[in-house]
Image 1 (cartoon, helix red, strand yellow):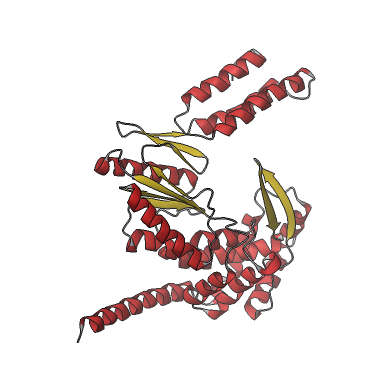
Image 2: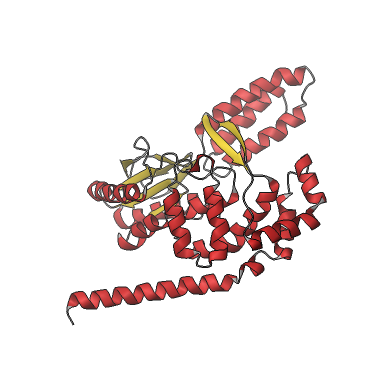
Length: 374
């Protein structure tokens, strides 16, 4: 047997073991009758009402939850369920315009079961540890801590030498390649009865392209979508200091040349997958230079300490709003206590970072305007 034949045989054995693990995970879910059991759907239906019980549609949904759950379960089991039309609206959040497609609460019940009982158990095992957006035990501050750890690890090995490659996708949700999502379903969701509703959710996207913001299934699909790119960076390229939060990537390399080579490789792989790179936000910077990741500023000092500062634009907004609230308080439309409660939210945000100076500035400005302490 030649070396090529031995390599091919090992590759086939690895593929067979991976496929056996996928089959075992899929079989562990059970048939669709167990996944979409009445008890599970009813429980998740109640959770869909949390925080939105003031809505008339939510009140009607919960009033008929007992019988409505049985009707929707029957449709899912016999394959006649289809997502209803979403409510389309636009938000402008801190200068960023986002189009939201909110599903009906009856569909949210099914989406929640599909996400928690099918997508999460099947997708998470193939995801890297440094990709925990929208995952239990993860979140944005988890990624801040992981990036700080990777920066400290790099400093212990290479000092202040090295570079970072920062990458961002353009229109990550709206332009998501649906063919890649269907391919993942075919590869990972091996039960055709469970694959059918997952495909319907992807097909229901407005315009037939991308994944809509506002759906729980979209969040889980898009978190797991670049898993092959993540595994290439971590496993094939053997890069320890790498991770990402949704579409924001960082990679820490020992030299600028290595960072540029990895950048070309990663960008080429991402574009081959059908993902669009944001050229303006994707760049290579020196390790010693401060940089921003997910609105936070990171800087490594000469002693190896990692300083993290919150979003500076938030300070501008907080100062502007404090001055705006002054005439409202004078007119009796607001109370000083209400302003103090609002300011405590801004202070709590900066207390998560190395921003003690900003906290003091906000407290002093509040005292200068309202002559009392927060």
